[in-house]
Amino acid sequence: MAWFTDPMSVAFMQRAVLGGSLAAVICAVVGTWVVIRGLAFLGETVAHGMLPGVAIAALAGWPIVLGAAVSAGAMSVGVGVVARRARLSHDTATGLLFVDMLSLGVVIVSRSRSFATDVTSILFGDVLAIRQAELVLLAAALVVIVAACAVLHRAFVALAFDARTAATLGLRPRAAHALMVLLVTAAVVASFQALGTLLVVALLLAPAAAARQWTHRVPPTMALGAAFGVAAVLAGSLLSWHAGTAGGASIAGCAVALVAVSAAARAIATPLAVRSASVRTHLWRTSCPAPPAPVHRVGARAEQH
Image (cartoon, rainbow, N blue to C red; front, side, top):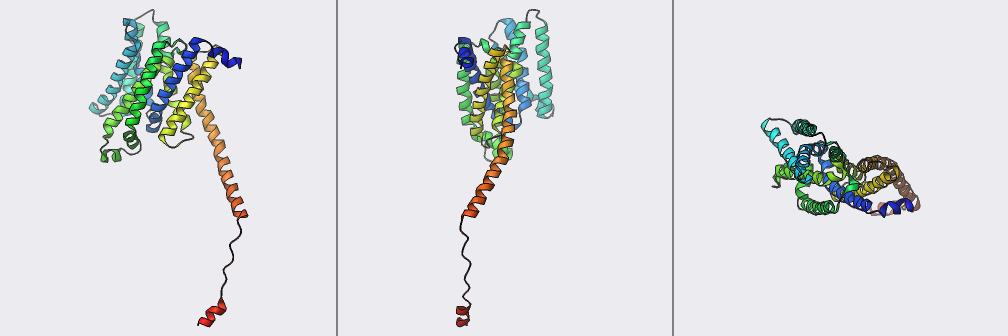
C-alpha cells in the first residue's frame, strides 16, 4: 500500500486530491445538464473564453478568478446577444465568439515576453499547487451550485426534455437556459485553476458521460458522475506522482478513459443481464407445475338440454 500512502502523506498531494475532488463534484453536477442538453461546445467555449480576462488579470496583478469570471460572463452573455441580434444559431454565435475570445487572449499574451510560465498554468492548470484559499473557494462554489441546481431542477428537467412543456407550465425556458449557461460558467470558472482552461472540459463532460451509461435519471447520474470524477482525480494524481506526468493532464486523461471503460463494461453487462433474465424465466416456467386441463362435462350439458 506504499504506492498509495506515500503520496497521500504529502501535504500538497492532499490539497491536490481534495481540490480536484471538489472540482470534480462541481463539474459532475453541472456536467450532467451539459451532457443531457448537448451543451459541450458551449462549455468548451466558456473555458477558452476566460483566457483574455485571465491574461489581463495576471498582467495587472489582479485576482485570476476575478478576471476569469468577468471574461467568461462576457462570453456567455455575448453568445445570446449575437445570436439574437445577428439572427444566427447558437452554435454559429458560439463558434464566432470562441475564435474571437481565443485570438484576443493570444494577442494579450503575445504583448508580454515574460508570460510563458503563467500561460502554461492557465491553459493546463496546476492541481499540485492548489492553496488553502482555493479550496475554500471551491467548497463555497460547490454549495452554491448544488443549491442552485436543486432549486432549478424542475425547470431544467422540463427545458431538457420539452421546452414547449416548460413554457406551458410557466417555467420560462429562456430564463432557465440563461441560468443553466450561468451555472456552466460558474463551474468552469471555479474549476479551471485545478485543470486549466483547456482541460477543465474533461471533468465537465467525461464523468457525466460515463455515468449516463448506467443511469436514466438526473440525480443518480449526478451522484455517479461525482464518484467517477473523484476516482479520476485520485487515479490521475497517483499517476502524476509515480510517473512524473502533469497533474491536470493526468486527471483529464483518466476521466476520459473512464468513459471508454464504462461503455465497454456496459456493453458486456447488457447481454449478460438479458441472458440471466432469460435463464430465470426458463427456470420459472420449467419449475412451475402445468395447469390442469379443463374438464368438459359433456354428459351434464347433455342432460341439461
